[in-house]
Amino acid sequence: MTEITREAMDYDVVIVGAGPSGLSAAIRLKQIDPALEVVVLEKGSEVGAHILSGAVLDPVGLATLFPDWKDKGAPVTTEVKEDNFYMLGASGKVRIPNWPMPKLMSNHGNYIVSMGNVCRWLAEQAEELGVEIFPGMAASQIVWDTDEAGAPRVAGVVAGEFGREPDGSIGANYEPGMELRGKYVFFGEGVRGSLSKEVIAKFDLSAGKEPQKFGLGMKEIWEIDPAKHREGTVSHTMGWPLGKNAGGGSFIYHAENNQVFIGLVTHLNYENPHVFPYMEFQRLKHHPMIADLLEGGKRVAYGARAISEGGYQSLPKLSFPGGVLLGCSAGMVNVPRIKGNHNAMLSGIAAAEAAAEAIAAERAGDELTAYETAIHEGPVGKDLKPVRNVKPLWAKLGLMGSLAFGGLDMWTNSLFGFSFFGTLK
Image (tube, rainbow, N blue to C red; front, side, top):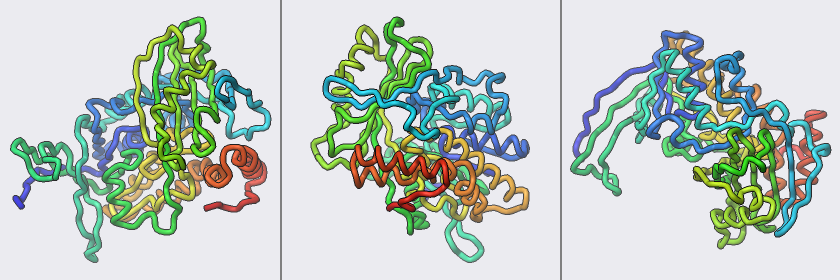
């Protein structure tokens, strides 16, 4: 095999992924020490290009980074005014009252946002602080090194490599890219990122943890008739079109400018092999409640993404020699709240603080164990642990059983800090 020679650039911290976790980490590093050399790699053509997300954002992470985020002009302006839950049948719906639901399920104080726009704004703040952001630069492989004892550690990544053939061989127009080396490398690739998977396997980070579970979210952005638009309204549904052997639910968020964000999440443990999540989403849009909303409107964007749904029990070990896993690379989505962006941002902040402390102590390439502790004992752990049994109960008991016992479990965790069920596998 031909030896590949690459140029190398050295940084204090290399961050893979310009999503909410990676950008939050970069900003926090520069807030702590402006002299730190920080680079963020983004595979999309621009920051936000791969983020089609109409989301309800808990602003806790944003407020931790920028207490004055409103004055700074963050694109977070549509506060939730109304919170609805429905159980759908083929031709009708039943409203589920809000009062039996635990407080953590309330969207009071949250905002309907485009996470693409939020990430573009975060990138602007990061660049103003001196962070280098390289869009259109996918990280294609890990740069490995060894410590003094000869054990492997992550030393950086290869970025900007182009021209490999489908079988991995070097093509005629091959460009080798360059090595971006860091004292620490943060992986914020999102769900099942290729480098994150390699790191998890290499260091056996999932040993002793529950298997990760996944869902598939279909999403669309629509411009609708202004007469039907109710800015600030959030609706979630369960039931139809997914049958008893396929879990999931839909969301409808009324954003600004007469836009609605609509989507369907299908849990990927369905029993019927003929379930087709895309077509289930198309069926959903023909339900009378949704068809009436969309009639006369225009779809302006669409896409899909995977969702990590295992929650607290499925978090792998988060730190390893030379780096950490951030956000959805680890799986920090709060499934009943259908929220993960706030935890992604908080994970980036915690990783930045651990790395800045280590670099100030003249450490490099070791394990940031303080980050692991901060996640489990800090706000991310406090968000995920009380809902840890909701997904296992849904898998074991189905929709109705999970509504009853999952709700009870969330209430006891919220009120008393314990669960009748302990921690379910």
